[in-house]
Length: 157
Ligand code: HEC
Ligand code: HEC
Ligand code: HEC
Image (tube, rainbow, N blue to C red; front, side, top):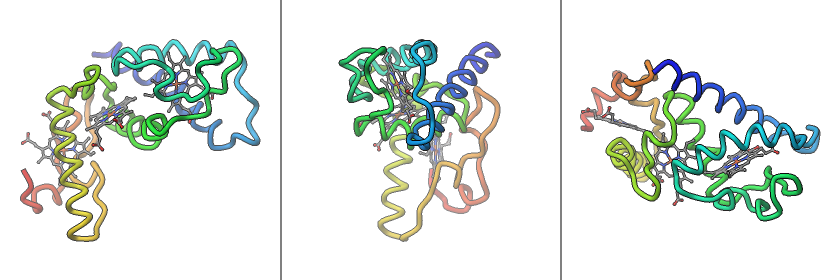
């Protein structure tokens, strides 16, 4: 468990650094090839967990790591950046906790159901829920098993 948590922390550190550079794209120095190679090691693990190629998220990946601009993201890349990386970071899980290639794991199915509920709630009650409206981040391994008062009150199962 410990080493898995450590691995995730280091992935997220790299990704957070990447995200910071994305936000300040105009100001930040472009990554050196060595820096890109280091990030690519972690990215390969993510790509394997989802069973996709770099091109799935990076629209300029065809030109290769040396020439390509990996700050250019596809729709799926943006979604990963905005939604998926933050969930993984907050709840200390890797992509493979929910994704098994093209399929969802049991946890992924459950998350999917909860996301649909969140969309429905927004439509009907005009209120935006987040995962944190119901789940309290905890130890790796028990990430989604602590609940807020709202979760109990909502009666949602
Ligand atoms: C599921 C989506 C996804 C896949 C697949 C993926 N990446 Fe990424 N990658 C991202 C996101 C999101 C970032 C953060 C980009 C940002 O916002 O700065 C990133 C950042 C990077 C960066 C740093 C970019 C920079 O210059 O700041 C490199 C290099 C990179 N990825 C390489 C790869 C390689 C190589 C592969 C294939 C082995 C790959 N990625 C697969 C989503 C993905
Ligand atoms: C807690 C569960 C969970 C984790 C962890 C998770 N995902 Fe997801 N992911 C989902 C669910 C559920 C969906 C479907 C979302 C929807 O219906 O809006 C999804 C959708 C996506 C999509 C969009 C797919 C499409 O067809 O548009 C991408 C890309 C993705 N995830 C990448 C990632 C990456 C990369 C990671 C790891 C950094 C990750 N996910 C971690 C549950 C998860
Ligand atoms: C309205 C409340 C609510 C929201 C919002 C919500 N969940 Fe849940 N979630 C639940 C409930 C209730 C359970 C089921 C707990 C049980 O009975 O085991 C659950 C279970 C889960 C589980 C299974 C945990 C396990 O160990 O089996 C995962 C994973 C999960 N949710 C992920 C998410 C993610 C990711 C989000 C945000 C995208 C989210 N949930 C948003 C209420 C919510």
